[in-house]
Image 1: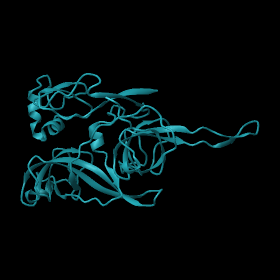
Image 2: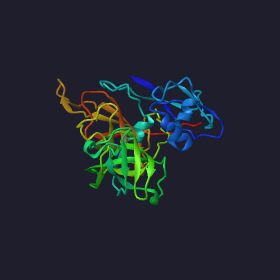
Image 3: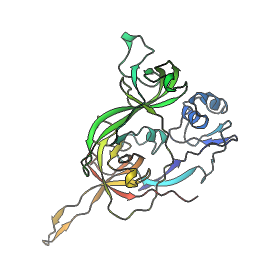
Length: 337
């Protein structure tokens, strides 16, 4: 059984006022960042939409007026593309959006190249007295980073926070890479010569001292081609986004050992299988049983030699684990317009 999923396409704003159709994961903070280049104008969007009770009352399909941001195309065929992905089963988290922008921006990565951060978090929960400070920060908490006005930091600037994880080995090449998980997104409140005070706007992990500060990167469009591909392209699962899990459930993210260098793109679909075995029939004939698909995954983001993929369905009790082999079943193709 398959379900149709509508994927929101991020479209650049033009110079005239227009409407925007809210997608999964959208917030006023991010809409202000996308359309105005700063998250600080979210109240302008709220004021222009009196039918919205508050910033927490956005829902997919709601139409917002974005003052001065341009018409974005609410009608079918302009701002949406239809895609079919296998339905998730056996998951208590089935209400989570598939391929939402927040999921993609928080996917993380495995890097086989050296990652050089802009800065690090030097203090968390700065707003609290030292003896009352927690070791981790949650959304709304204040942090300090060792990156200030002397490096060109400005008030309102947005950064991603990432955490260095474990080493993993590519089973094909034997090369070692490092897992980097997105801890959160922060916004600069004020700067000094050498440091900045930032507010933690989103957190995927509790942010700690020592987490890396890197440039904020938004995600682009994702298309899914529904036609199966020929061939037997295989990749391996290197690690899971959640370091506390041994297996990946529906809507969990995993890291695979191939990326843009292998011409993989966001939207490519992979499947994992339980493989056939040799069995003897009653007549004494030896046959090989069928390979049974156990899970389907969609690539969210790609690095040069790795990619982050979302588990969009679990078809059996057997779950995805590090080391599993995945096979390409659909290749991303942008539709003609």
